Length: 223
Image (cartoon, rainbow, N blue to C red; front, side, top):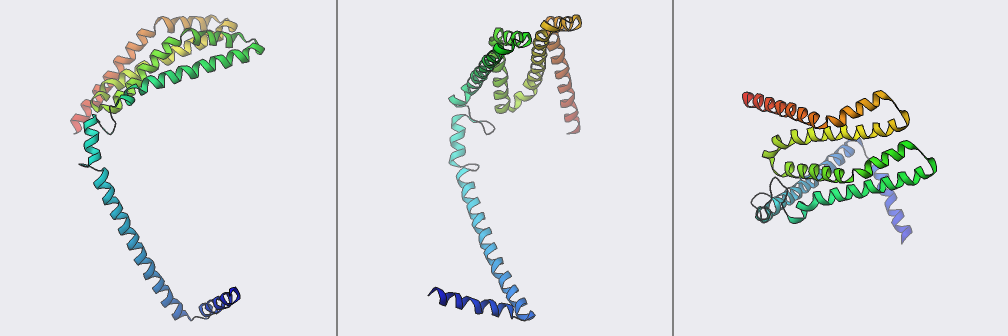
């Protein structure tokens, strides 16, 4: 039976190869029409599927009404798990930092680097500040994503705090470097940064809010 089928397929190939240009053109047109009909049918199926999904999950659907009952805002819900998510993120961040400190101390046991030792001491002594900063920034992002009106108020605050926090971390790193470098310039720079970190934060905050006010004013004038 397999031989008979193979023999039946060969003549069809020969007939196609022996087609004239007109027959091939007619075959191409017929094939194009079939593909066009299939494409239209596929497009209709996609449209029907989109309409069904819109009715099920779109505006005024039961899912939308369920989200409104849960207190959702801007596509994000205020459920109990979402509210504790920033705490979980902060705890995970601290765990990762503790593991990193442990690994650095383990590696430094063979190296005996004063820089790594001073760096791990800096991070170990300030774990509580890193956890507080994690809570602050994670909850700030949480609120900004869910309350659009709070974006203009919290974004300058988060940006200024993040910049000041980064300066504080860099000061700690350079202080660790200076344990072995013993540079007077680095020592003075570190002392200045740590002593004036609050002033740096306030100055950045004032500039950020001034810039935000200017942007809002220009936007309203052009509106």
